[in-house]
Image (cartoon, rainbow, N blue to C red; front, side):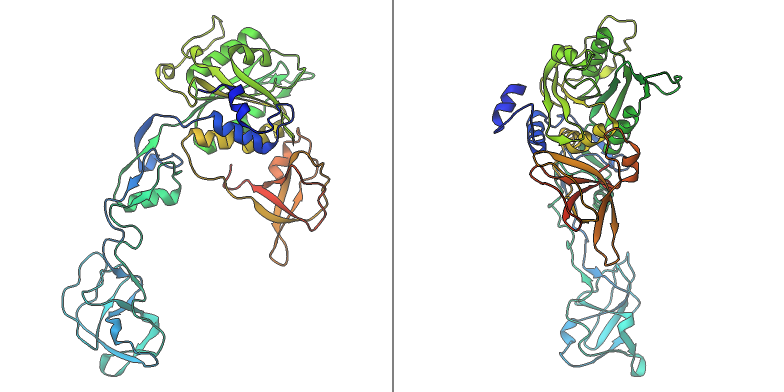
Amino acid sequence: MKTIDQIAAELQGYDPQALRAADVNAFLQRLVAPVAEAEEVGIFDALGRVLARDVVSPISVPPHDNSAMDGYAFDGAQLASGHALLLRPVGPTAFAGAAWTGRVGAGECVKIMTGAIMPAGLDTVVPQELTSAGPDGTIHIAASVLRRGDNRRLLGEDLMQGCVALSKGELLTPAAIGLVASLGLKTVTVHRRLRVAYFSTGDEILSLGEPPREGAVYDSNRYTVFGLLTRLGVQVIDLGVVRDDPALLEAAFRRAAAEADAIITSGGVSVGEADHTRTMMRQLGDVAFWRIAMRPGRPMAVGRIRSELQGKTASNDHQPSVSSYQNESTHGAAGGSVLFGLPGNPVAVMVTFLAFVRPALLRMMGCTRAAPPLLRATSAEPMRKKAGRTEYQRGLVTQAADGTLQVRTTGNQGSGVLSSMVQANGLIVLHHEQGNVAAGDMVDVMMFDGVI
């Protein structure tokens, strides 16, 4: 297992006091590893989970040639370019779910419903709406409206028996769940659910239900992070608010290390803060403290809480009992629980989570899917931007009268203005080298829909 310093040495130009956003993600992808344990779950419980092994199709889908339309099936060899065709329907209608028996000769066809097995020797279906009544009960097909093989689904057109239907590392979406069901499979093998412990730090933090007091603020970070983690599909271990007390902080970190693959804290990672969080992180783990060239969210800590803490608890009257998870053998990173120390301002917490923590947690979940592409939109207004840092501005993407996408900021971009995240539907990503943006310039947007 590589130390934080060894990982840092692999990154060209690594500077913990002036890290680029791209370097942070590169670092985190080296730090974390997928959880090793897997389990078999029913498909109703598989949504949002990550496959731990390939799903191999036990059947071909569809299992036979079948009709893609309601209409008439016939031998397409009878079609001639520039010529109409008259066909006489024979036999019973072919319905889905049963094989059609009988013989079809030249000049004949079979009325067929969508999904019905194609009768032997027939390879083309004319939709009912493309036919008209001909003489003596025949149907008339106009010239040049069909080609041989039209409106026929081929055996194995979707999947052939023995082929990989879904690959290891695939995030199971609603479409993927439907695909598994189409194979007749009741269960899938997935990585076990990632366990993430979270707590807020600081004497100035009020829990819900406490009366207001001068200089104190209610804790919003616990609830936004809870929502972000829940959307991600991990098991959330809420450790509440931890005061700036060494014993309480040590107890919280020890419990988190015993129960979780990853630990997220908010607050206490800035240089010069009058609390004990940074000291405790250093004491209990291998941790780097960064100043990232970004806005908002410059301070961040990352590392591991040492594995020997797992299963140990501090002697403290406030220490909750440790769950049975401490007896399991592996965590998300060899040698300890991965630690993400986020800044304390509410917007900075959300931005650093979306930009850095979410991709790292997805890797820990075993997911190999690439991050969603950034959307390109026209800036509806000028934006001031200092080159040399990445900025994530809260934006609202709308459709202009000409159908193009445009984006404007939500106004005040202060890192404590949580209402701006509610008003936004994405983050305008102004990249490290980028300078001021003029109205009409194209910018990148990380959309919230599909991300959180």
